[in-house]
Length: 142
Image 1: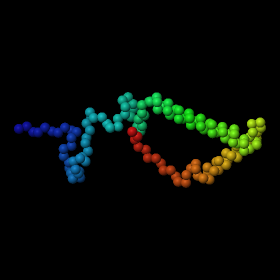
Image 2: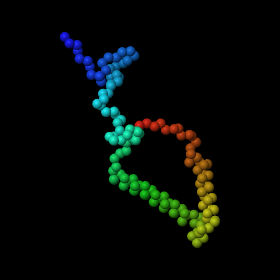
Image 3: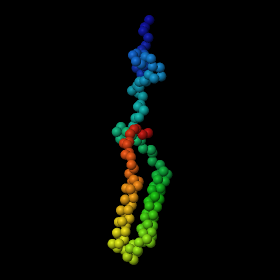
Image 4: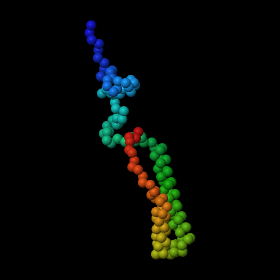
């Protein structure tokens, strides 16, 4: 009688040593050369280029929506700045009326307002919090 055939190389058949008392489902399965890796990069892309992020495919509708949101945000910001600069500040300070521009008094008013704002950010800790932010733990994003 001939000896029984040997098992394929990708199958673990016996366990010895400290792994002998572990259940069969916890035995690591070996991967053959024909099986692809779980995190293989797309074809034609070097592995380092796509290590942490695989960009989604381009969608025109999402691009237009995000561009519209950015432009709306910019329009609100510019409109708010114009409201403050052309209406509120001249109504509060005589040095900043349109007939007196450019004036040293208006420059001084805006400089003092900028210093007050910076002091407020520092005093209330709204720019930087009291606690130090811990460094981020990076991991593969998929």
